[in-house]
Amino acid sequence: MQDIIKINPNDNVAVALRPIAKGTQIDVAGKTVTTIEDIPQGHKFAIMPVKKGDSVIKYGFRIGIAQADVAEGGWIHTHNLKTGLGELLEYTYNPTGVDVEKSDEEAYFDGYMRENGKVGVRNEVWIIPTVGCVNSIARAIEATARQNKPEGVDEVVAFPHPYGCSQTTEDQENTRTVLADLINHPNAGAVLVLGLGCENSRIEVLKNYIGEYNPDRVKFLQVQDVEDEQEEAAKLMEELMAYAANFKREKVNAKELIIGMKCGGSDGLSGITANPTVGRFSDMLVAKGGTTILTEVPEMFGAETILMDRCASKELFDKTVCLINDFKNYFIKNGQEIYENPSPGNKDGGITTLEDKSLGCTQKSGSALVRGVLAYGEKVETKGLNLLSAPGNDLVASTALAASGAQIVLFTTGRGTPFASPVPTVKISTNSKLAGKKGNWIDFNCGRLVEDANMEDVSKELFDFVLAVASGKKVKAEEAGFHDLAIFKQGVTL
Image 1 (cartoon, one colour):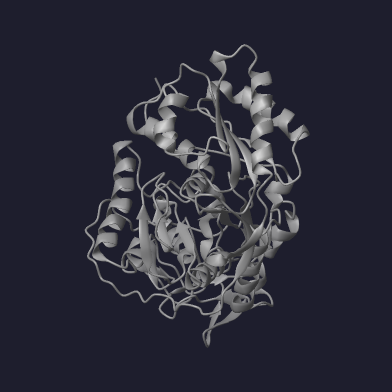
Image 2 (image 1 turned 180 degrees about the vertical axis):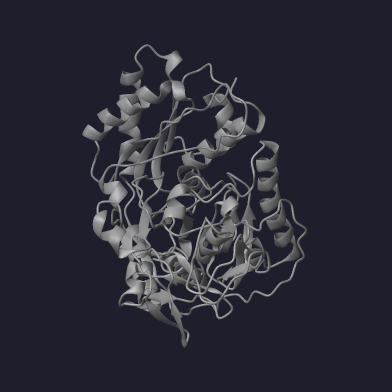
C-alpha cells in the first residue's frame, strides 16, 4: 500500500493515503520529507517550505493561499489555508483539449427499447404527483399496486415532492419541466400522473410540458373530479402495469447509455481514487459512442477553466461561462459568498478549500471534449460529455441528472450516504474503510487504488459493473427500496 501521493510534479503538497505519525520519514518523488505533525488520511502536508501568501499547489493548480508560514512536513488544512477565489471573472477561450479516441470494440447491455426510440434500464411504473397535496394518496396507490405487480414490471414507485403550487416564475417552471422530464423518462414503462385539480401546475397545464404521449403509457387522474380516487387509481394502475409488462429486455448497444456523474460527502481521496476512475469510465463510454453528464456547478468553481478549455467550440465555451457566472450571480443575489464550501464532512476528510474540492470533483469528467452544455431541466441531445446546470446538493443534482435523461447516476463518496434518486444510483467509495463499514450503501470500492489495484483494471471493472446495472442488477439503494426526488427550489413560496 502506498503511504502518500504527489499528484502532479508541480505540487508543493502531498496527500497522505493512510494516517501518518509525526516524525515519519517519507520518500516524496526521491526527496525525503519528515512529517512534523500527525497527518490524517486524505489530508495534505507541505513537501517544501511554504511562506505566508504563497500559493498552495495540488493537482498542478492553486487550491488556495497560505495564511501562515508552513515548514516542510507541516500539515496544511483549514487552520493555515484559505481560498483564493474571487467573484465574477473574465475568461478567455483557450482550446487545448483533445477528444478521446473512438473505440472499435462495441459493448452491450440488456435494456428496454421504447416506442420513441429511447432506451430504459428499468421497466418501472411511476406515480408522479403534480402537487405535494396528493403525496399521501400517491403513496397509498403505490402500496396497493405493489401487491398486484405483474411479472415483467420491475417496481412501482411513487415520487412525492412538496411543490406544484404556491410557486412563482422560474421556480414554478423548474417544477413543471422536471416533472414532465420524468414522465417521459425511458426507465418508466408507464406513468400515472396524479393531480389535485386546483393547483398551479395542474394536469391540463402540465400536458403542455409533456408534449406528445402514448395514452396507453401515460394516464391522468385528477382526484377532485372523482368520488373514490383509490378505486379509480386501481383501475388505471392495472391498465398501466399490463401495458408496461409487455416490454422485455433485449440486447442494446452501450452507445445508448446516458450516465450522470455526481459526488458528495467527498474526502481527500475523492480526487485520487473514485473521481478519476469515473473519469476513465466516462472516456470509455464516450469512446464507444455513449453519453455522460457532469453537474454540480458550484463545485466547478476554481476548476472551471479546465472544462472551458475542453469545450469543442466557442459557442460551448460561451455557454460554459454563462453556466459558471449564472450560478455565481445566484449566490451573490442571495447574499451568499460563492466559496461557502466545502462542508464539514469534506473538511474532516481532508478537503480544505473550494478549489481543492473542485479540482477533485472535475476529475469525473475524464479527458473528453465537452460536447453539450445544458440548462437545468434540459434534456440531453448530444452524445459525448455534457455539462449540466444544477446545484451541489446531492438529491437535487442527482434528480436533475435523471431529468436530463440519465438512466443511471454514478455517485462517488468518501463519507457515505444512503440516498437514492429517480434512477439507479451507484455509490462508489473513495476508501476501503467506508466500503467495509457501509456495505449496505456502497456498490463499488475504488479505495483499492491506494492498496493493490491499478486504475486500468478498476476502470474496466466499473464499466462492466455499470453494464450489469443497466441489464437489471439492483444497486444497494434499490435493494433497500429507496427512491428519492428533489426539485431545485429557487423562488418565493406564496
